[in-house]
Amino acid sequence: MEFRFEGVDKRHGSNVILQGLTLRFAAGSVSAILGASGAGKSTLLRLLLGLDWPERGAVLIDGVALQPARRLAVRRQIGYVIQEGGLFPHLTALGNLSLLPRHLGWSRERIRARAAELAELMDLPAQLLSRFPGELSGGQRQRVAVMRALMSDPPALLLDEPLGALDPLVRDELQQRLAALFRTLSKTVLIVTHDLPEAAVLADRLLLLHEGRIVQDGPARAWLEQPADAFVRRFVAAQRGGLAAALAASTRRRSDAIP
Image (cartoon, rainbow, N blue to C red; front, side, top):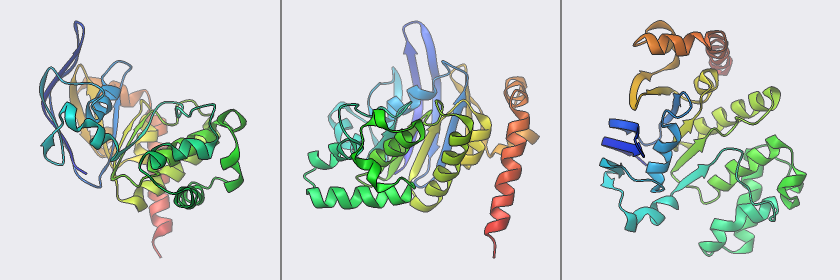
């Protein structure tokens, strides 16, 4: 699934969120959107889902402009993980996973088989599917949230600060799990985060939003070696040690994977 923004302007009241934004995310690509709080990162995802609309310009899904009449059909093709997962507390993990498949008419057997497949993929013990969210750890809840987004096998996945509330050890483990998942699924993935090292682990392409515009767009190493302006240099300097470590670890993993 391909995403495009063409000359998009977006305001919240008098605040300019996006200005003349023109972007393309190729089908099967994995990209991370970064920026300070209020930079418009989550707004990009909301525009793709038809939860928000631009004042000017167009949002295109597979070359077709998104319109209100089409947004529900588009949402069913996009998995969405919000901050802290957003699981319904009165439903078990399996109940949360079943919501969209039941709406689509899946049988109970098909739902259970898909849930078991995803539990194995996300390294979640299958017996935890019968528990309620309050009975799961933070890392387990986030795994279930990702599984819910993947239940219908959508061609695209949007994640909004998916790991922000987790402790460092759990967060690192899930970063590695998601990075491996993205490499194998061949889906179009957009991740919103403020964490530059995390973005370097998860995505091949990193984009930095500032004052409504993209000020840096490219692989993580280019951010270190070729920052576009003073703001990018400050943004990188605040997380330079973590970014360098993430890049070194990524290089080691690629080397280990070569027979």
